[in-house]
Image (cartoon, rainbow, N blue to C red; front, side, top):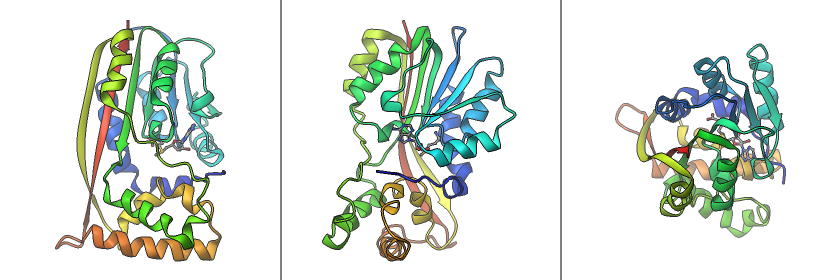
Length: 259
Ligand SMILES: C[S@@+](CC[C@H](N)C(=O)[O-])C[C@H]1O[C@@H](n2cnc3c(N)ncnc32)[C@H](O)[C@@H]1O
């Protein structure tokens, strides 16, 4: 299935989307020399901040989306960052790294146990793993996607849609981390994004969770699907008195240093 990401849609809420990545970065200090990878780097704005933090290290941004990688290359061509179109599921680094970083991407990857073991394998001793994932389970907008896409008139288009695999189970991942790492730092935080506009939650999710669905629809069907989705979601996220909308997002952060 081709999943067309649109950098311009994703970046509408750049400031709000960047905040968790900056919070994650603020807790990372590197304890060994070596390179860095940013897995699921998207349009590259966070990768650029990583570069600014550690300008002398080799940094590679990896993303499966042609559109995202092209945007990153175009925007940050003078930043001395390597950009690679690749699937995280099959990714492996040529040399062991000082930091494997990933912000808001690993929720798309299945088999987290296998994945985390692989990420750790790609780290040097004393290398750092720094991960943030949104927790979309029981989120109204995620449940609305499920409800709408399961209706018979839409379900026929979405048989092959890869669902967000949102089951990073902290206890399970801790078992893996504790055998290979020290200095394990795990936390969850709620963000209350204050959004403006008519249907801002739909605009937000258009840039992420709706992408696999919208990619499969013709232009007229896309519009109908989005209108139906907006109706559902606008009722679930009523406007505040000042006409703004609060989008509550819970996020899980994991930082660990390999032994
Ligand atoms: C929500 S965006 C996050 C982008 C960036 N990390 C940031 O913090 O702004 C998720 C990104 O993960 C990428 N992605 C999803 N599945 C992937 C996979 N299997 N391999 C590589 N990248 C993937 C998408 O293309 C998208 O750019």
